Length: 204
Image (cartoon, rainbow, N blue to C red; front, side, top):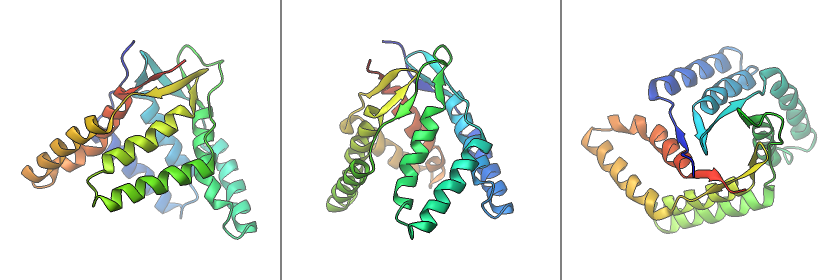
């Protein structure tokens, strides 16, 4: 099995996030699609799954058109359609994500809203009932569901990470954050992303 890894850096992530946030604030939220596609494009370029680097060909203009449509539908339905926006956004994102050698093949996300709500509620319940101790279990459970419903360039993803494996890292990252008086916590998102991608492969 070929390696999967994420090679993006913390300073790059902070830079893109700050720029995206600045653009969104200065345009009163109008340019949020530009910020989103800019950050995700960077993320895809630094993600390698099964030995192949990902590419993102979605555009801010394309997302903006969908954004307006989703917003109008949410207004018309008195906010009810808003529950579907997260799923619609994932679907749009993955439909525009491909490998360098599989640009002509189909990419998609086929997870449903009720499934997402169910897994999210279960994960939240587990986390709350264990006072946060089982957060790694909830996280891996939800991410495992997401990868099973994600197809990149004709290949469905598979996730082999375990809650025990993440829990070990979680404790290490937590202790390092305490020792460094919170400084190490800035790296947590990058560390978590690297761990996730390293355990993500193509199922078939």
